[in-house]
Length: 145
Image 1 (tube, one colour):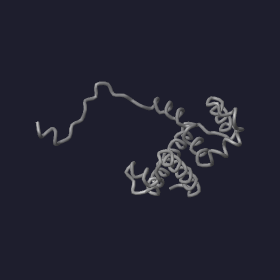
Image 2 (cartoon, helix red, strand yellow):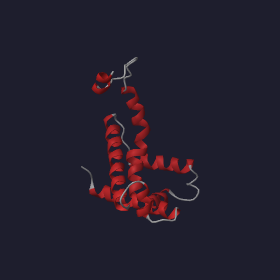
Image 3 (cartoon, helix red, strand yellow):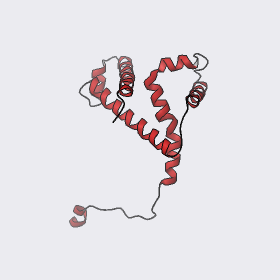
Image 4 (spheres, rainbow, N blue to C red):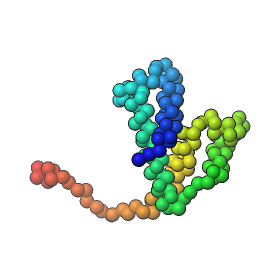
């Protein structure tokens, strides 16, 4: 299940992105979506939004499981660092940057971007490699030999 408000925010953000790239390439959003194998922009945006939500929820849940949470102050500090590293702080204040990017982008930044590295690092500790594990073969491959 998911929050309809978050879905709407992410859908709107994705719609703006698709429109931007479509205009950049001199086409409409439906045409660009068709290049990705979708019937139209609406179908592309719906699937893209659902995928973003799955990623954000997964990384957010895994982060909580390993004890990582982000306060509003943590998010602001990370955004300021992002802005500094990308030369954006010279042109915009933090509030302007947040407004320009919108709530959908901020949701993904907090729930996906900020959790990605710590979650991946924590998961590396949980992965177990089995040395010299033989590749399994299917029943068809075994009987065909």
